[in-house]
Image (cartoon, rainbow, N blue to C red; front, side, top):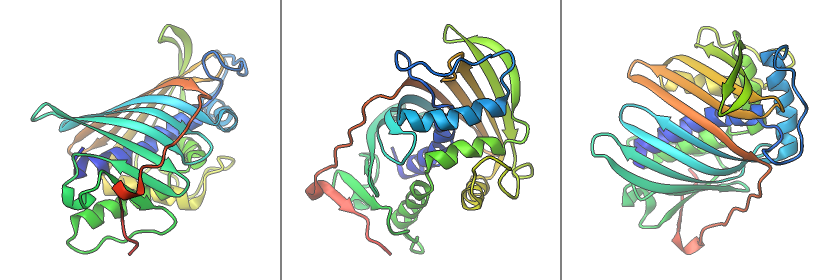
Length: 285
C-alpha cells in the first residue's frame, strides 16, 4: 500500500468504525440480543441501542472492501468496539498494474504499528514496522512527504474513538427507515441517510453523545477530501446486530465505496507488539 493508499485507507477507516460501533450487538452464535420489531424500529433507535450493546460486546471481527477508481483495499480482522485496539490485515490492489501489496495494522495501548511494504524504504528507515506514538500529536514538516503522512495518520488515530464514531451516525439528519428486506439470507431492517457539509450540524444533536471536538474533526475530514456527499446504508437483523453496511463517499474525483460485513461479535482479540528492533519509531515533532 503506497503513501496515498494509506491516507485514503485510514481516512475511510473512521467511517467504517462509525458503522461497526453503532451497530454492535449480539454475535452470531453468541448471547442473544434484544429482539427488535423490525416493522416499527426507527433508524435512530437502532443506532442508540447498538451503541450500548456494542460496548457490552467489546469486540467485532469485520471484513471491509474499500473501492475507488485507482485501487481497492480489503481489510480483515478484530477490533474493539469500546476502545481503540485492533489487529487488522490489509491487501491493496492497484488498478493500473493489477498488483497487490499485503500489510497489517496493529493498535495497542497508545501506539499504532503499520507494516506496509508499499511505503518507500526511506519512510520506514529500513524497518518492517512503523510505530506512531499517539500520546503526542505530530506536526507535518514543510516539504516532507513522510512527515505529512505520519501527521495525518496520527491525527486520524487520535480521533478514532469507536464510541464517538457511533454517535456520529446520528449527525445524518435524514437518517431513516428504508424498509424490511432480506440481507445475507436474513430478515433485516434497512436504514439509510445522506450527509453533506451543508447538512452536517454545527453542534452535536441532542441525546447523541457526540462531542463538539469529534464533530469538528469529521467536518475537517470531509473538507480535506472535498467530499460532496456521504451516503450510508445499513442492514440490521432481528436481534439488533449489523449484517452489512455500505457507505459511498463522493468527491469530484469519483466515489469511494466502503462495503463492511460484520463477521462475528465478541471474539477474542490479542495484539502482538512487533519487535522493537524491527520498528521505526516516528519522532515526536
